[in-house]
Length: 273
Ligand code: SAM
Image (cartoon, rainbow, N blue to C red):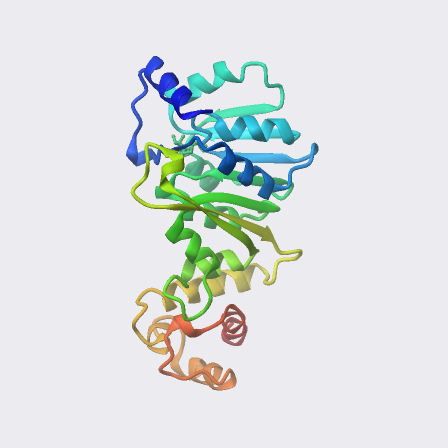
């Protein structure tokens, strides 16, 4: 959908966009096509889209996927989408808060791909919720604030490396990402955006108990980035056990969480539980 058409639709429906719902719509055709290309869709694919907005991405997804399930929180946009896609047999629209739906109605998404330009205020929470679901999507192609994208692909030692990086790494490997300038959206957001592709690992690295423990360790270790991790972890684990785990991994007691690799967090967890 071109920018002029977008403005016309919004004016005709008297729809005023809401910042709190992250309503910055992507109107740049090239960027939309790059997002769809990153999803590598086949005719048999099922796609979950969170926040279809005015349906610019939805239309392209419908042309390439077997089925699209789109969840939109804004009723005014739902009404427009229902009219606009009245003939689309492979689209299911749901008026709901996607984060609440994911949290309260667990579903097996393992046979799905998430392709979405996410509402920025809840983007990280939606990703963590899906990554921690029993059946998490095979691939997630998500557009979000560039800073959040940096956190998803950050390496140890980088200032963006943190709990989000590690909680997603448990189930996914980041593949590519590309920047999307603010000028590609209407209205223009204050920050640049990026589209990141995350591929689900062939097998979960950890079982449920290990996942629960590593999540607790990661959250505690990054709760105060500047503090020594050993001191922070003492809140949850006996000092002696911690000390011998640090020794076994040759970790300095002075180390801060951001220098540990993902593998070191996994090893530490296995020594502590
Ligand atoms: N997909 C469209 C596009 O690319 O132009 C719109 C993306 S816009 C960044 C985010 C969309 O998510 C908006 O349509 C907004 O109304 C919707 N939204 C915001 N919070 C939501 C939530 N919790 N659940 C579902 N949709 C939500």
